[in-house]
Length: 309
Image (cartoon, one colour):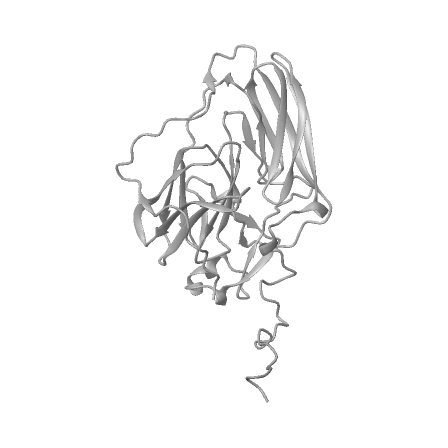
């Protein structure tokens, strides 16, 4: 049976009739007449970490999740999608402490739960599936999203089964939003309020642990998310010297300083080391959450007096 998370967050909210939300960022829009561009590539050095494996039979309504299974009764959560050239998908590259520049539309996250996976409603099929050598489609879960603090998040459950949306403020491990996801065309969700300085979020279903997505909070529009080739571009950046952060959910962030010239282009690359993958302690496993060699009576203690003679 799937582990059910302790519900300690906010109760679920329907977003119908929610008041408008104002941004807490100090960022200001301004004309950028001589902006520069940052281009580059994010790569992963070393062997690509194995997917985490979740036997479908351990989870409620598992039969309805078989479309994203491996055909052998397991969900394989691939968190490192790497091209033949080493480019790594799903890395957020963000320029820090930019106070003004190009327009910054609010990042309101509209998600869907479909085929027992969470992902942004506007994600393309190209990001969801990979064509195998046998010319078949294999599901590749879109792993990360870019978020803004104090903005709404909505989820429409398109599956024929119940889910439960939980958002964690990952640096502290606490739930900041929790809401039920019944079978309904009505969006459910609420407002994400991160503590100052906290930037990393994990979304997970309280009933299906393999339904995991990650978010990185930004406070300006100068960011990019890498796709299959690992490349990125950030443009219209006011000239100056900046710190640029590259972040992937299971690796420690890398930071570089770069000087952006007026009307110019500067290239920077980020290389992550696969041997330094970091996962929360509860998520570490050799292969399965419960090893295949586990004996059903291993949890029993030795019988001692006065219960045994």
